Length: 124
Image 1 (cartoon, rainbow, N blue to C red):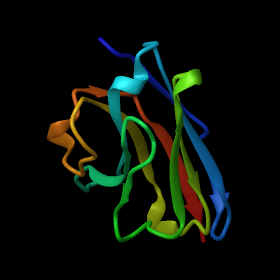
Image 2 (image 1 turned 90 degrees about the horizontal axis):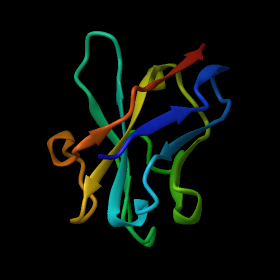
Image 3 (image 1 turned 30 degrees about the vertical axis):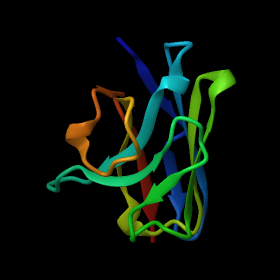
Image 4 (image 1 turned 60 degrees about the vertical axis):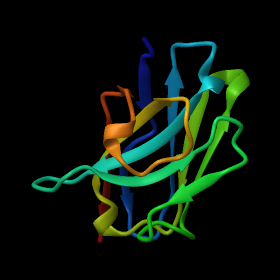
């Protein structure tokens, strides 16, 4: 069982930046592909970014590519999402997720463990 705790959300103006963190309860976080997803009110959960177990491979949704960066520090059992040039449409609850093995994936069904989420609000 892996517990994930997100932090770093908040209110920011359009064009600003935030860095989200996801702390994992396991010391074997390097065994997991990690992902970030988001869900806006009235919408389905959508893929944001994913990172391989080693951190050498990443994947992004078209809507955030070039603005967001996913990274991980396996020694600290933590995954990050650096979000720059934020837009009002980035407003959502952001979730961290862990996939046991495999490769990066954009499908929520491929992830077994989820955090509680952290709210990101971007004002215009």
